Length: 185
Image (cartoon, helix red, strand yellow):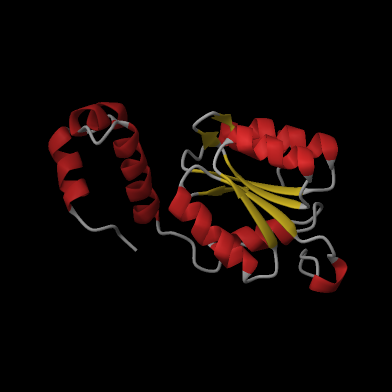
């Protein structure tokens, strides 16, 4: 292929490690990537992922930035120390420039905001290092990105509306109205 993506013939090792502490998301992404021809192994924690990598370093990895027992960047460094040509994609619910730069410096080929679509993950994994992955076919709307961010902060604040509003620098009643609505498309 000429669009910066390897063809299936060029890739022999399709081993993929998915590391995320969100079990439903991890399982859903694992099934989707298996249906795309990857040999998937999953891990729920940094410690579990490191022990998996010590047995077999995958050709590909999808790693959540924040795990309950550490930072996914540590795993990127471990993978690239053992297998520099591996393609790692970082996932995060906390997208910002500083963490994106840190992920790329650690060796990640791309950085995607959660919830990431399996098609976008596959494009990012298969992109050539010197090329860029093509833009998503169906990106989230700005309203959806905002809603996802608010939901994430709300969950991290243990569903405490007042604390979430304070952290988001938002009026509590405004936040309550947003939380009462359905998610935008």
